[in-house]
Length: 279
Length: 259
Image (cartoon, rainbow over all chains, first blue to last red; front, side):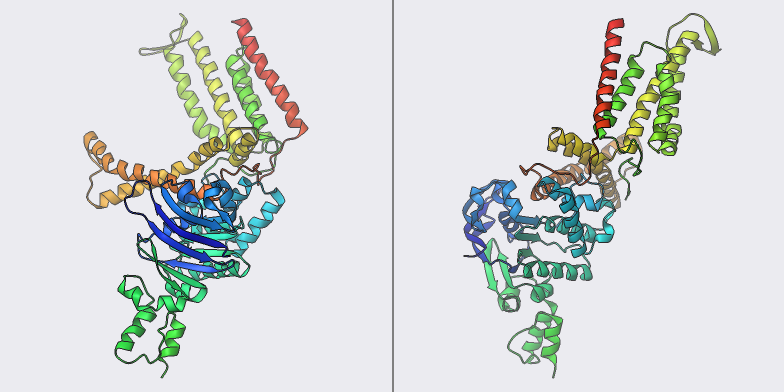
């Protein structure tokens, strides 16, 4: 039995006419790192909210089908219990700062205070999480004085420190530089190795190819393609349907038309492209 | 962006080590005794002797003095002058300046009131200087103040400067697209309209996201909350709270009895 199990999930926000998620079936195993991609309006964020329990508990609206994490049904749980198992960090880092705390250290401890973790354990866990995401040197800064990328790291750390079984990330690197992005992917990969299940919405296809176990491409609220990163990310269907693809894939596609790319498989990363173009 | 968003100064002193509620009661006791006392000189003694001593005990003497000179004294002086010249009591004019006259009674009255204001603002200043806002809020919520209420108060203090900064960004953006924000009254008032929409609707969206963010971090969890900061609460605190409560009750009682 899969750790995350979505069966025929269809969901409509209270004020929209068409469903944002349509008949979604999705299984994720424990410790698996799944990347979700898709154009704007494909339902990526809504899928994240659904996994994290905010759809429908917070947004209301009409939902059918079932959402199960670790054998428990979302519909039979309450939001405050659900978030203990499922952590959510989303795109806009500024709005994820609680506003009730004066330093980054306190900000990260906020969630642990809420769920009643004893003080000494709390300090250890915050220290550990901050060194994991590389923000130990920000501990005494005000969260509002940080750059967007740093705030995103704080937001991610604030969720990681709560040690959810399922980590849901909605474009957690959108304001980061390439080095920051790489580090975050590395941290997420490490968490997955340690048994945390990860679902991450992300557009940076090269990093997805590097780090994720599986890719799900969403389009208009449906699962459009699903499979191993290299199969999905090099599929012709992606280009034809307006998905972003890696520049190395684009280059190799053009090269293939002119007979310069000899291999069967198209590359996603720089390394694969370099290998393929070797005479 | 400003780094410091609170007055609090991190030091180790007898005042810092007191429980926030004890300090809050101390502030209340100081203010009530200054306002309700039947003795004329009480506010003066509090302002000139007790408050400075407290600031030294709290090791925030320098910070308190700088606030007092920059903020509290100018305000109190203004209040003093207004009341000394305009409060219509007393007959014998001791000082006149064109149409302004001051009597001994109005002088005494103004001086007493100015001192009360000094006591009130100073007591709060010392409280804010020696109390970490999150400590105050965790202590109050531990004592039964609803967590949501504490959150609203403390986050407002933090988020207001952010809203201000955002308003500034929106104004700059609108100006760069040709909005005129300078000129007469009506022009300036009119320039506010394109600001309100983005600011208000933007803030509403933000509120929703922030609600999700704190909910995701267990804000409404039914667990008993813990606190990162150790909040001091010693037998001294309990004794002081009893003492201060008695003092407050006594000053209210005395006032009622005498009136």
